[in-house]
Image (cartoon, rainbow, N blue to C red; front, side):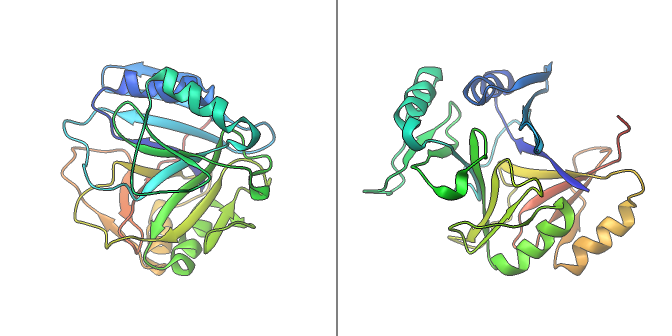
Length: 240
């Protein structure tokens, strides 16, 4: 298995997808009425697809997954570019911090970060930041299903692609217990040749996760939560 997608529920997939596509300089994959997809490829490292499915009413709860963008010496330039594309400044009570908090056109918060040594070679997304009730426990699951391994960072647990390129996956302490409502942002993993979907289900369960059976129609993938309640999808093997 490998980490393939960042899924982002959207009221207007094309508008939101194009915002992130231009900001991150991604390559468009799909532009259909119900979904917009764009690809972020890190040379020598991972490829992540950003998928924006249409939903009638995205969650209004505080997000448990967000992105930190690479800023450093170019922080002000990245902020200005994001604002030009339709972002806005956002006050979440951050006060005097060295990073800048913004919201995308549908109100999803993200940060443009200051210089940090751990961000070397990340590309435009410095980190995927996921809230966890137990970062050590959940890091074990995400390492097992993504193939990413421990890396230096400022979070209690940080994982990274084996190439040591591309964004960090930071497991941070949750601010509140996960509500019984789907996250607006989530991560997907893809089965590889030879992987068994039932073995994947057993692996997730062994790390405290559980399979969900949402009433979303006949899906070609299976839906789970990690032990902290964060949704994830396991996508079927897809020959190249």
